[in-house]
Length: 227
Length: 227
DNA sequence: AGACCAATTATACGTATGTTTATAATGCGT
DNA sequence: ACGCATTATAAACATACGTATAATTGGTCT
Image 1 (cartoon, each protein chain N blue to C red):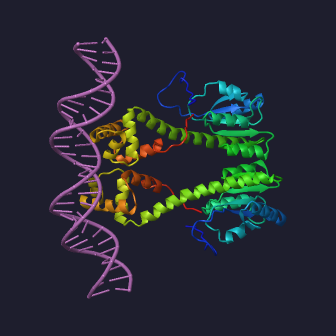
Image 2: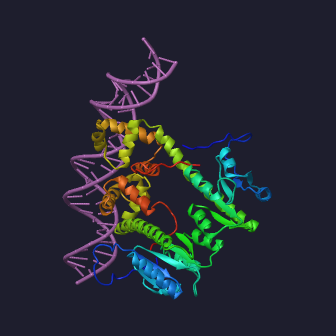
């Protein structure tokens, strides 16, 4: 749910672009321009918007990125936009900038997971440091997310029965117990279990158990998506 | 390391006391008294200090707790105290209060893991809500910590050879591979492996693998202690 | 020295797991 | 109707795992 993708436009598609994208949402045109220039000067790709709505309506590319967000905006405020992004399961790291901030705003932003909260005027280097930290955070989050997604797609190649067997194997049951649980013959369980190992590309039971942990099998917790 | 313990003083020792302790570090006597009264009124145990140094010199009981900390203090500032506590691996959740805060202070506090940052004047209820959130966080952290500590003490009952076998089992190696790795006969590995299962109280291999994950075996990450 | 303990190995047996080959019913898409 | 994937089982075999009993070595305690 709530996935956003983008055709890579034109050009190289092979290896992921090594460049991060900095999104800027700032209504003041002159500030927006100077931020854009600042980031471009250090070789960052920039996509700037004048409001939260504009950014939401755009296609957000699925690459490492962060968001430099003004608190005071026309329409949805920066803080409300942060809340909205969280609701949409879009976990882009956010750096707030503001001219008229106060402590409660700061607390709300940081509690909401913001990477930093900078008051104007701030030194360019402060913002750049924050951007580096934010993109690094996003890179790691994406890496972890990719691992989970890969495992999930492997898991989905399993037939329903094979999935059931995998769950019970992860729970530590013996083949004969699994057979009883599912109303199968033990030999059938063995065969499905072999399929599970092959399809999941697990090289040992320990491997498979760890995959199960990562997948959250045997754990009944709420959903969780990405971007 | 840096562990702190306390003899439970006198009285009941059996089940953990259900009451949380709120530490208060605030140099202004009248504020300190009113905070103490506020917390006592809602049934919380309070231990108040006039400076960070005083608290550091006291014996911090090993129970669920949180810290209400003034930013401006004689000697070590509240923010520096937060840094110092982190350095000492003391992870008590902190709620900052201040009369003259600013945004950079707030950001530093929140980045350092503070639960909240309240500017005077604030409503009593705001502080009480923050204290509830903080103690809840500490309770969960302690619970997780206790789980790990229990596993660690079980792990320490293993002989060096048994620990080595457990690591390699968790890595997914077969008995004969473990034997080759350690220069042992396979039968020896089997016997140690049996000891491992018994001593760790693992009821299945899946169980043991999960314990290994929790213990961070096969992961070479830095230290981590508690309180 | 003699008793003793921890670490290690061997033999032997029983159970669990994994794979191969073969058979068969069911349901789904073209 | 035909082909195909899924589900299910069987027989047979090979390998891996677990445990009980017993023996060996080397060092420690008395």
